[in-house]
Length: 92
Image (cartoon, rainbow, N blue to C red):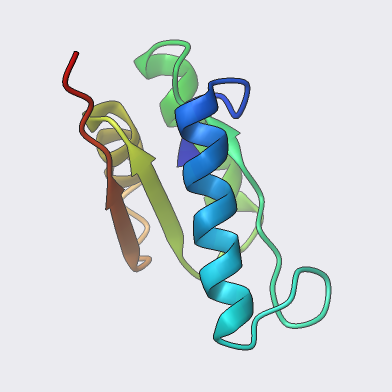
């Protein structure tokens, strides 16, 4: 997964909701699911590096969470992996 820091409440709540839905579908962390989270809120270079780490780890799918930088980072390695986009829009 690529997204903003889980230190941000909106990111943490979204991550918890996503993993709860996966559990409802029968996926359990450590049994038939491994979620590795990488931050994308420290600039594009680090976000792309995070995406490349996931590709190097033989990830089956990349989940891009949140703002546009997450999606751009997920697309950067051009590894042919499926990408799931979980968009978040915040209106002040």
